[in-house]
Length: 347
Picture 1 (cartoon, rainbow, N blue to C red):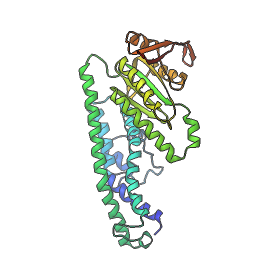
Picture 2 (picture 1 turned 90 degrees about the vertical axis):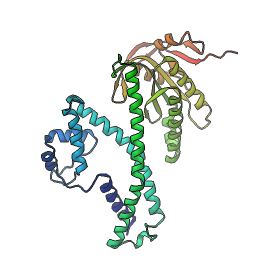
Picture 3 (picture 1 turned 30 degrees about the vertical axis):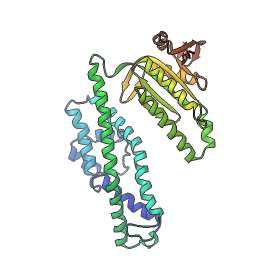
């Protein structure tokens, strides 16, 4: 049996295992059983990142799909979320889970493909010999075994990490009940690798993967140790926040120091701004975010630029040296006054 056919059998078996059974509902069935209008079903389905089948009569939905639609609309009916937030929450959840599953599927798939590459099934036979229904059953059994070994562990880790972050976020909100969760005053920073675009043209895929993994690993470690939060990683750039000006400054300086020690890593440029931001579904928005991004793109390799507000908050701290630079003319800001941030070296 060709390897492609074996992979197809394995894929179908894993889908059945993960989706809680075989598909048995059409779009019309889902509408009738859930009591949710068709337009709302389609809107939520698309928001979660799933394609709508072109054939309305196709049997493609499972009991788990039906339960998920009931759960999210149930949150609205129970007034846990406002009706106008329903689609946005579904979209954010879908985008987050989509990114998360990219590496999870990589873990499971590598284990499966290792088995196929070894040329063995669960009973030690060559794939070319697997042609009978009994052989297909053996492949399905092997796929179920792999899913049973790995998926619950990944799911448990995912649940634990989510609960830990939820507890930390809830704790911060309780500690400062006067502050709205959607509007906060923070330091927002960006750090990106200089010359990344040209690097992508020279590096092989495995080399690029290793570079990005090292960048994200080192940056995340430094930001977490500095009491900051990683907002998101976008290729060659990490966006972070900190609750105090001092923490933000230390994170930026530690990032530059760390990456300066790697001979095979590109130099960093960092920009930070301080002020009110809109916190929405795990991301940050507002003028402060845009200012930090402009400062980053204007910084020279190996340097840190901060805005005037952050400069005022740091200037009395003897740990930091702040040098005034010429105003910048950048998109969205008529005159952006940057200051270079360095450690105050005292001999």
